[in-house]
Length: 548
Ligand SMILES: [Zn+2]
Ligand SMILES: [Zn+2]
Image 1: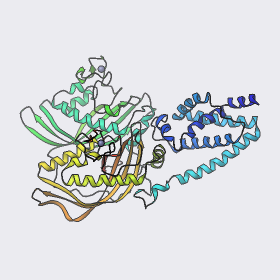
Image 2: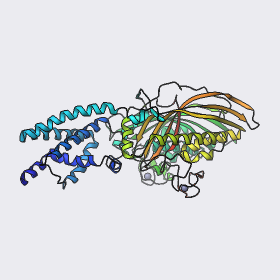
Image 3: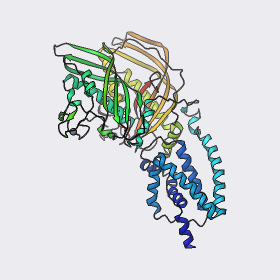
Image 4: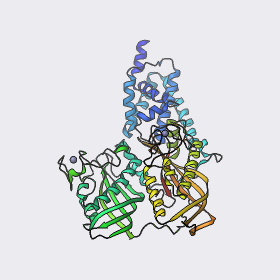
């Protein structure tokens, strides 16, 4: 009998079943450590993968019901890692399925009763899973209208979304994170503008092609100051060809304000719209969050001073290649106007009644987040959104923007702070009063190695008017309510867990929520604005900008 069991265990089918049993049992409840580890942050697991896993799960249950199959897991543990690796690649998954099918066929020949039983159960199981799968498309607890976050009724695919296109990069670059990329792009723009003013673009050869450097250069400049990226849009991304040796390209549109001081003593404030084309080797390794705004030689990390044009004098390599990091191939100015920010006009709302752009992987990614963090709940997130919403209206209307600091990512807070300061300088105040959230719809959930991100579409109304320091109405209306909707993206560190906080308390020490401009709690000094502890707002996008 012993010999038989060992022979049985030696069959590939059983091995695969046992190995996957470990994976499966780590899922409910304790699924967190698993998904955080070996799935390598590949947030966008498709429903096909889940189907295979569920299928194998079912097979295990059947196998367990047969006493011949014990649980000698020695050796299995080693193979477990091989299997989880296999699951991560398309070809690996195909091999797995082939093994399961061959094993099943072998079992049918070797032990017809067991084999046919398993096969029969498999067919019933497939049917059952297909049924469950079709109902799973709408997770009940998120679709009820009683709750304050709803799922839009008609999921609409945003096929051309650059963010979506970039996500598969994680297969070849596990560190890739959209949050970090956007932080990097923001820093790159700001730093390159400063370098233009200092006539030091040659040092940026690792990040700017010769063509880009030439188009950005302006010999008349003495300094470029007050560079503020008001909005940054990932327009298109292209991940053509098989990943690995191939390139990824990205078009980014920046709307920015800056002051250019010329050598002749003159200075102008500009509003600019620029489109930068970037490229990178797909398989290059992305930077960690802490490195997002740090620039050096992309090849050896030496200080930028070592770089001259396309060559690093330290590592003696060509660096304007995009082999190791993003390289700007061209930088085009689409609009450049000599004006400061416009504060006395109100733009009409566009797209408030347009259907919500819902990511097609929303359901899948949401369940994955809930498996990772069973305490994640829509109720607490909805309450936190209200807390943030209210804090923002007050901070904005009173021009005391520091009050919004604990709830906003560094980048969003600084970009908005620019406008608050502009109002102050112009002796104007934009007031948002009697504001209320009408509805919150879930639009997108995304996870990567460093961050989880949740995008909601927020419908709200309120009064919106601008007054001068004497209280005189400049624009807008003090009586007519304005309806609007926006897409808000909240981020949280991938290791954070638990229900969102809806009280204005420090998420680390529990003390009164008072933070410095850098985002540190005044009492425990913890940095609360990186999303390490709780969800922070990192993007606000208008209807007409979001998702295209
Ligand atoms: Zn170097
Ligand atoms: Zn604290």
